[in-house]
Amino acid sequence: MPKPPRYTPEQIKARLILIVGLSVSIAFVGTIFTLLYGLLFVTQPLEQAPNDAEAWKILSPLTLTMSGVLAGLLAANGLKDKRDPDAS
View (tube, helix red, strand yellow):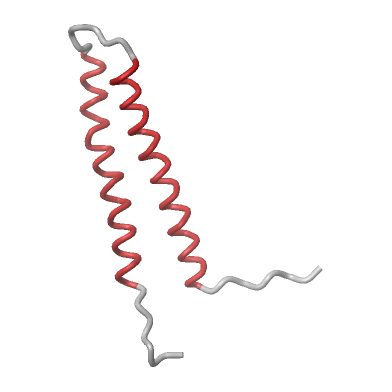
């Protein structure tokens, strides 16, 4: 059975960025849908419980951080890997 060809460092980096990007995207979308579901379809009492207030305080910066990570990952990947047209 022949061995598959080894990946180049660029291919490994591209796969790693894809896996990290997909993982953070899935977590971000899941968090947003869970928050929206809780707001729209779950009956809320008139007064917010202290545990719910703390959960919202934690989830708000978490979603901002995840969106920042996604934006940074996409921006950094697009800006860094410019190939030199003279190098072949």
